[in-house]
Image: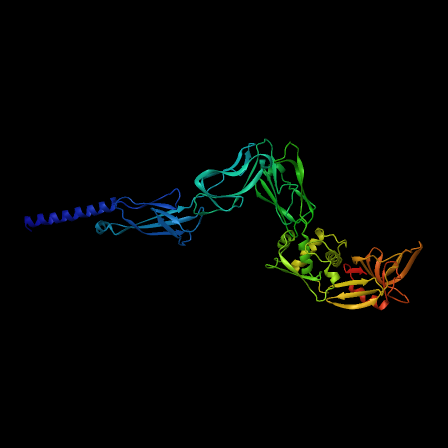
Length: 531
């Protein structure tokens, strides 16, 4: 090889080496895209000069599912809410300028793992000076907040301290609120946390919800929050409910105990007392007196819902249909409906319902039809027959509604004409099935006009009392007795004739008629005495 040829070859090799070195240097030193944190977006894409343009973005969750985002002003924004603390993988592809792409490649890719930011409350049991605003504080600025279950609210600028909207004075010296917050406006709110505040005092205090002395929902929750840890205040003992209610106390956190009843709740129309193992200072109350017993009242079930249930269970001559869907056949749903009855419509079940019976009915108000139905229900369920709808009656009503039990023997009504010729008429399920002459009271002891429910129903008994002249009578062996007003009753009696005033206030019938009427007049059956 000649010297000239060797020089040429050396020059070519050197040129190739220089070009290769320049290519490597360009590939190493050429500007590349970077993924950086953003104060408001999901991430920020930094593109130095000559780095190129973004051609593709891919975001995936920890499970590999794609996450929809949009690129705006070099920032990535989720198109759907993301949970706080969610781990994501963000990948970006950048297309390089064509004039350099031949040397260092057409695209550059970068990938980074990020976690959506989380916020934490700095305190959940606050001591607040009188007259000071109640605020909640977070370990990082929040952009989205919900207080007390209200819709999420975007703040004008992220902040670490958010006012609750309450000044700690008067009735608001103690209280609580559910708080949920997110660091980014595109995050979904986490489950709320309960924050309670108390007056700034040197001794433990108790915040009870609902406020003692107020109304307690029949299936509601009692919550006791202490300014100090509950174990420090109460020790190992738990509060006691009286009367006893099925359910159990739960520790929601170190400071809070909660009781939610099971079964039929606290009992409609009842009283609830919680007896604490030690005396405590009731937050918001003036003075330093210790309290051991807290009291609430449970609202009565409404008259309208009582009528709806009695109709639904077959104890009324009316049917009821809800305007919307039926109440769910659960105890909790029935308890709620007892206090807030659903809308609906009553209709008469039978044709030819006597006008006397129709005239007794009034929607949502006490009336004789409801009173008789309640007494019949009480007798059917072996309860005290007093016509009073207390916790035990409501419990039995709701139990039948949930179980789908219904009275199927129809509805009976008795109306007696006091004008001569006197008669008794037995109406059942739309028809007068018996009309018989009868005797009512003599002028000195008349049968009282009005409508009365049967309150005692016996096949045979002794009837005694005082005659108008002051003498006493005692008649054993009286058959088919249905007492409806004091000592007045429908019963069989041996008379030479019927249809005129002959009794001492009772409605007397021939034996055969009384035997037919008696099975249709159980306790609660209405008897109307009219002229």
